[in-house]
Amino acid sequence: MKRLALVLFVCAAAFNVYAAPPAPPAAGSRPAPAQANQAAPLPWSALTPQQQRILAPVHKKWSHLPPERQQRLLRGADHWVKMTPEQRRRARKRLQHWRKLDPKQRTQIRKRFQAFQKLSPREQAQIREQFHNFQQLPPAKRRALRERWKKMTPAQREAFLQRWQKQHAVKSPPAAGNN
Image (cartoon, rainbow, N blue to C red; front, side, top):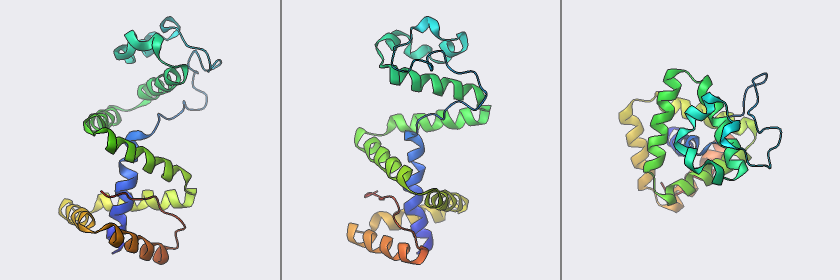
């Protein structure tokens, strides 16, 4: 049962990675050109050549994007530059997966991420540890646990979550949804 709980929280946390906003620039790094004035739109010409290269796919739409979206894209571009080739490969793979999801799945993932963000740091760490432990399981075992979870009714899932909470003294794990 412990491992099944792990699956539940792994599913909730794992897919949330796709919805996570890019990390802010590291301390001491050069800020993006518009970070001083976050409310104003940023002209494409104000971007560094490196940012323009990374953000080239949105060049034609850039002037029509809300300033907040521009800022998020700039933070993402700055973060991309600092990633290792392996991190970039994994990010591309996650993005491809995200694009294949239907809107309902994306919405569900965003809600799970928001619920995860509201948890205490201790609860978040617990879920991350459980996700790591789940990832260490053999693929066949992970598949079996996922299938077992999928076959549960919503009432069975709720009962399972309540038992798991009591066993692990966790106040409020994120909702798992019906997946």
